[in-house]
Image: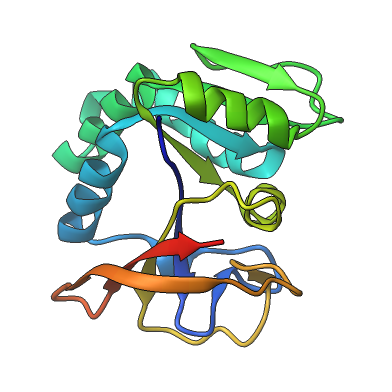
Length: 186
């Protein structure tokens, strides 16, 4: 049975983007990017909300890949090999390879996907992740915490969620980013 991982880049105060929707403070160093690439390498399917999908679809831009840094080209390969499911009632179509569009998040369909998938799943985007967290579908929460406080914006975790976690891995990077990996006990 595959696991569902919620991986996010956050500020120290728990936000994924600021009040204006910016996340420029979160651009990873080469060391952190390489580490994040390794985290996602085992992912067979990415589950994405519309906004996260629109940001991530950038990884199929051939102009980027031609002259990009090695860690960026490496992540583009990780992205390309994985299936993607985008959940959106408003998105008209998808523009990336190996991508399916679903109109709503169905916890039972995700449970079935976990049971049948030979590789782990990763959920991206705080709104979509909130549904999976509240449904008890997330097996691990993996945060790359940046040494910045942004004071507000889009929270990485939903209000009203209560969950016990067990720290299973941690790592500190030269630029002050800290990786925290928690197993969820629903």
